[in-house]
Length: 381
Image (tube, rainbow, N blue to C red):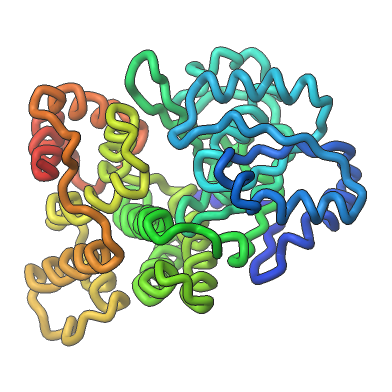
């Protein structure tokens, strides 16, 4: 069997890494940046940290900020038109998954205009050309969108999110600077951090997992278990640990896929606009219990790296429960709710059908069905 690994051409890690953006832009002879960032990051001066680097290096840019959480087809289409008017030749994406995903879709459509309807990008799109070059600068401790070939767009009209998988959308440069994450509120740090843990655990247990991606994922799980609580309290060591851990998780799951915690979270985001990280965090322990019988000894390793004592002396049932309990406790410790108040009984059929149709569903270690997904959603009520 042949396994493929795709990563950035270049990545920078550590405090002050954003200074390298100017170095890369000049080395690649880029002329004008199209900066994709959401309004909140602009308002609170986070985006300005990067634009100052550009200004200090006399690099020209234009900002696009018509981006919302769970970005929509409209956000993408408006961005495509704005990019054309700007006459830019590269994109700098600054933000979490929303800014990154919007930037990826814009970059792909500019290079492949036949996909301008956006919906046709769902799944594995047959694009012919690489995206407009993207320099990705994450500001959250979880999405790893800077090192993945995936992006997710919301179809408001059909009340669904769709996953796009395209090797052509990989950012050419990732700049992972923990100082860019220091202004995040506690809730956002917690939810994006739990999204990173969901990436790592689902990537570790997915059907396509193999030795190299297992190496990435188990290290990411260990680092998140040690770092997330501190990151939520805005401790320097915790922030730095999460910045690297979420990137390492992305190195893995981008290449092997995810599972139903993500397919269900996408559906909750589309119907209720639930923040993606919160939805993932609520679903993760529920899905781990459901999948346990199909995970071999992997929960044993999860329990170990999350600090559970005495794992080697446990039975299979005991260490699987210990792994789930450790994940659930971390989620509680960082303030993630266990129930979703918005969830309605009359929505369960649509939610389950949508989650079953999601691109992440087939990677789940346990084969599932609409009826099972409906019961899993019910556990959030």
